[in-house]
Length: 445
Ligand code: GLN
Image 1 (spheres, helix red, strand yellow):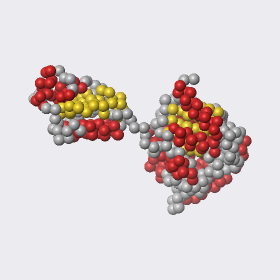
Image 2: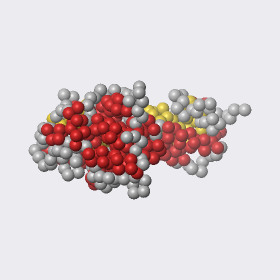
Image 3: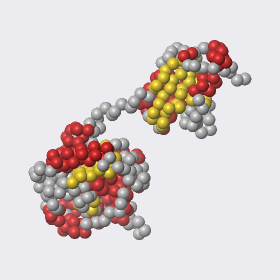
Image 4: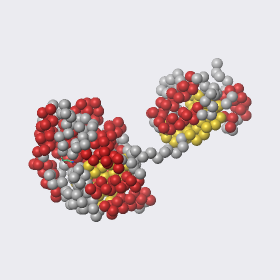
């Protein structure tokens, strides 16, 4: 076993050992087939953004998705229809109520959010149904792409829920009586029951959560299941509504977008970090796995995963703030430099995002904000520039140019170069020396 496999698996095993003896909670029995589950089953799984899979206990044991299906069908609806259209039908406010409550807006009858049954039934009904692409076929295909393998339906659980699902049918009729249900209530609820009856394992759930955490790209298959903005929207609704009337307390204590289901599945996602899943069918009164909740809460505390913690500060972005006087330059360039006085040189490293770009721009002003001399930005050791950082750096450099300062970038791959070379676009050079030499040379023409 490798070092990483050992360390992560050990952490999961440790949690498993700590909570396996907890036997509080009851199996869901309002869907009779769910009451037949092994009450002692307990699996934990984690999948990293690199697609490394870690599991312990019953991480391979099958169970049905139940409400854990809701965020993924919501993702499909958002992808197909867009946030504005979906929001016309389903709101995104925490209901503060149980999963099966009549959580409908007073005047419009619109469900509170897509994580409670009322909102999930409407979300399912929003998925287009066409002869070549039937509604449930689309849903099953999408759930499988999130999991990274084809999934199937546990027909016994489905039949069991159809027989006992009057409350959900009642909800659907109530919603239609107010207006906002775009299809027949019985058909909507039956499709919803089928998505709840899709069979998965804890490892599948970890992959599904990891896909959301990874901006919609499944880290096991590389498949872009939904666009990045959709993944972020779903995680936002999971964070505020995923644990029903316990959502606020969960966000406060655990700090991860999560979703529970009455078969005992529970997922949590660490954006850009991991997907986590637990399976243990004994539930607390809110319908959440008792051991799953303990294990995920404990892991979050132990590994410092709370979303609102300061993210690990990136290593230093700006590695050098100096002037060309202090850099070893060729004698000829030394002489030419004399004409133009000081050239400020700032070097950056690593991946540049908003935070890093702000540091770089601040450093560009730092040697002498009153200075009118030239500025060289050295990006040779920068590994990546996101779109926000690129736009910030371009406009910051354009401003310096507009102030009459010569600006040059050591940027051999031309990452700051603009398509069509805008008027204020910075001059890009292969090396820092060439950039400084250009800044110190006689102006052309
Ligand atoms: N199929 C279940 C229901 O609608 C799902 C509920 C849940 O997992 N919380 O009652």
